Length: 420
Ligand code: HEM
Image 1 (cartoon, protein in one colour):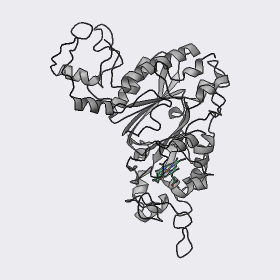
Image 2 (image 1 turned 180 degrees about the vertical axis):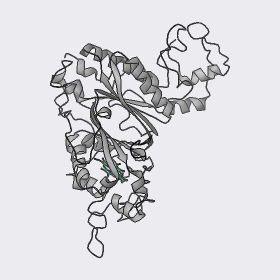
Image 3 (image 1 turned 120 degrees about the horizontal axis):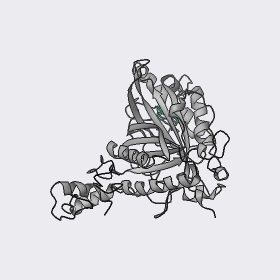
Image 4 (image 1 turned 135 degrees about the horizontal axis):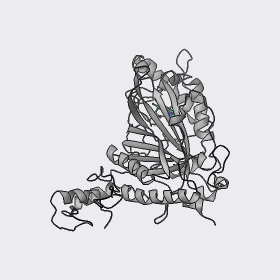
């Protein structure tokens, strides 16, 4: 008896009746069977790990994020494969609300599961894994003998305007995006993967996020970012299969057959100069974004989801949505029809020791099938002309290939290692 649900464990701890003991001396006993209602609630709390695509992309955005980027210390493709295999087994357990190892475990050894999520439900935890370009080539070296299997577009984004990147919080060989409705569940996931991976991978940087800044399905309400604006109104909808096929999933034309059905993730830690923003007049804030603050309606409309009219002019002949407005420059019509699936989170990491201002902003994450013609092309326009640039700065950047989903019994990026 290894994995039990964390809820069962708590029920047991609270004086259970069934008395099913778990291995080792003095184990917990299971408690009452959960009632039908809570059983159903527990099911709704679980986002399936297995599927054609990894969860955490088009599945509804949860409230919290813990993101970890890892450097590989593994030296062979076999060691990398074993790491991904072990991580998959752990991810299957944790996303189902189970522990990653026996509880309580052996008294003489460190517990395999670190324990802080015991008693917490699955909380819609999703764990999404990605591979950086440095897995396939680092300093001109094919370190794992996998260079010939590199996804076609997993190449550096190059310098983009509006950024001042900090290398120590950028890039990485692997990434783990853990999203959940409970921050402790998301933290537990990354912490336990880091622990299991010790010897093969080491955490390079991590970022906590709260308050999703994008709705990713049509039935989610739009929340607000730290500038107080609704963020995600004109996002792609993860439940629109046609849009996802067109903009998010890597198609059957991808030369690397193992990567078909995957996606590319770009992450950007974007610092907001909140104090400057807070001194700006409401009307200027609204012209900077191109939308009304409270309703989220475009400046050409009345309701949040009114169509944005970029052609509308004032009586003086000026565009109603200014030339430098964020939504004009980010709009598909300004970017050759390109769109991205945004799935970011707000963050705050205390005070900037240099300026004494809040170190807060948007941990921007987006998914697409072509990071160069989608994210980078849009950012090239935004970074050079967006009125928002006065209030933000991109400080970290990473690009990851997100392998397709995992079938039951399989493991993440399995096709990368197949010899067929
Ligand atoms: C801190 C930085 C940013 C802030 C505060 C911000 C905020 C917003 C807000 C409030 C909206 C309007 C509501 C909506 O449709 O979602 C919006 C729209 C959008 N943003 Fe951003 N954004 C930021 C960075 C970015 C970046 C880096 C990109 C991509 C390179 C981007 C791409 C978009 C797109 C594509 C839209 C929808 C435009 C449309 O079709 O109407 N944003 N953003």
